[in-house]
Image 1 (cartoon, protein in one colour):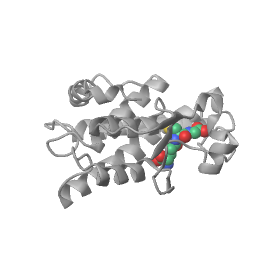
Image 2 (spheres, rainbow, N blue to C red):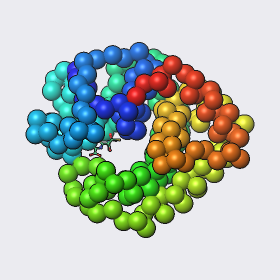
Image 3 (cartoon, rainbow, N blue to C red):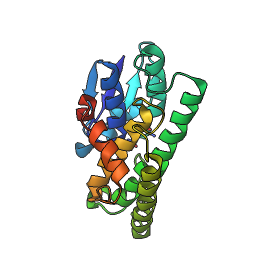
Length: 210
Ligand SMILES: N[C@@H](CCC(=O)N[C@@H](CS)C(=O)NCC(=O)O)C(=O)O
């Protein structure tokens, strides 16, 4: 097995925290997104979408999506469970992970990629060249406000996003909160439930992965 990644970026970080929680280590090749490593022909041959992370399994299968890689690794390393043990836990974790990704991570991505000069004509990851649309920055920021309020409500009276243990939903929420800092948007001061939860999950050793 071999992992190609750039751990500091938000999507790879989701995977690196997941692996750290499970104590999974594997051969690793850094793909430096700051230096355009994702467009190197040898990497494009592996993943034509030019995104990280990428996992190549022992039989040569290429997985390019964080959720797919996590599903695969959870099946190989079930403990500790991060994707749920019961049918209901699995459903609820997927429900919240997906919402947090779409409503939180993607809201920040929208505001970040559509405004940062380093991403001119690269407003979405991958090989398609698209101009930055300032209107999407505003939209991303509004979506992010809505996300904070959704997460704040969800965490009222809860230690973790789903159930009574740390899961992928917490990993995704942690990465969404930290990604917000890339656009200088910290969790609003009035979100006391998020602040309490964040103090706990960001103190886990795995949070340093990525
Ligand atoms: N759908 C992919 C998305 C991965 C993705 O967007 N990765 C970003 C880093 S966070 C990337 O590789 N960006 C390359 C670029 O910006 O050119 C997944 O879930 O893993």
